[in-house]
Length: 130
Image 1 (spheres, rainbow, N blue to C red):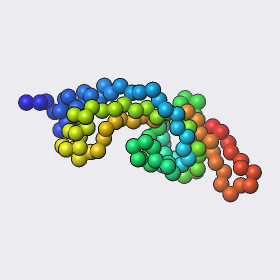
Image 2 (cartoon, rainbow, N blue to C red):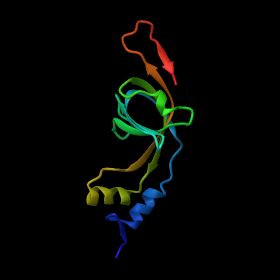
Image 3 (cartoon, helix red, strand yellow):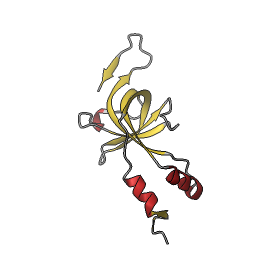
Image 4 (cartoon, one colour):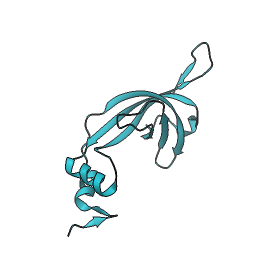
C-alpha cells in the first residue's frame, strides 16, 4: 500500500517538493496588487493578461530592495518578474487530474524584479519606478 500525506501518495508529493525549475523567463505585465504578505515578503498581483498557465492572479516573491510599505493595493503597476517553471511528469499530471480533479502539468514560481507605478489620466505619461 502506498503511504499518503494529506491524501496524496508519497511519490506525488516527493516529485512536487523536489521539482527542478528551468531557467527563469523574464516577463513584463501590467496589473495591480491584491494582497500583501509581510511575514513572507510576497504579494498577490492581479494581472490584466494571463501568465503561461492561464492564471491572472499570481503570488510573487519580493526582492529585498522593494519594501511592502512603499506599495499600494489597487494601483496600476507594470510588473517585471521572473517566471520559473518546473514541469511535472506525465504520471503525476495524470494522477492529479484523475484523483484530485486538478489540471496541472507544471509548478510555477514568480519573483518580482522591479515594478513601475503607472499614473492613469496623465498627459505626460508620468511613471515612478520602484
